[in-house]
Length: 320
Image (cartoon, rainbow, N blue to C red; front, side):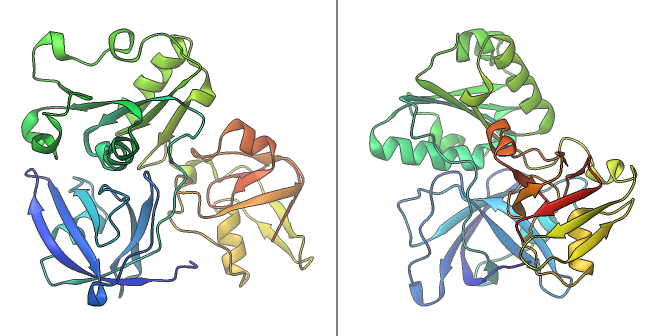
């Protein structure tokens, strides 16, 4: 992993709900933090001894470089990341990466529809802050099981551009594609983030209503499927164009696994095909894309995720 860590201090901690904690981080000596664009996330070194790293979206106003804000849901099936974050207290030190972003606000759209499900509000809240600051046209739809399980409701409920949709609320406030998204508009971009089932519903429904894929921007917090379940379909060779080195990718391992085992300093972070840190370019061979982050255009241009994708050809040459 090729991170340059930033040392931060937790200066604010509050329980937004029974399962969501909001953390405010500042740099040492109140130094300005690196700038970021709405939709960005950071890697967080949750447990340095165990090397436990997780990714969390920045949900504060991007124009404020005095602090970063994170909101973390305590996952019921946590592998240690969210539980570790919930144990943080004011004054604790936390190492984070520089912000990265593959979920930014489109510079081609005139109007922006933000659709959040549950904790998926985090990157979309930063987008709302940014769009508000520039006076852009946007709507934010925040869907959750109930008000009690929703973070930032007090901040959002009086904003006329925000609509709240609770599963336990009246039928007339439920989220619906026809009423809340409407027909395709070439000047509008849709942004979706939240649990997998929620995202699949919104995206497939929007496609069904005629919205083209390029109008829909998404960020997942977990892969659609477990990539490991698809690593048992034979071996192939990865060739590195810059050195000529060749590495066999065996059944049960990823391209990234093979490169790291071979001593290659390959970039990576989430190892699930959802953050984009491991993306490299394919120069020759036929890739078998299994990520959930690259667009069709990026795949056609040769982009490839080493942590989750494989090859249809016997040799895959990478720009490494």
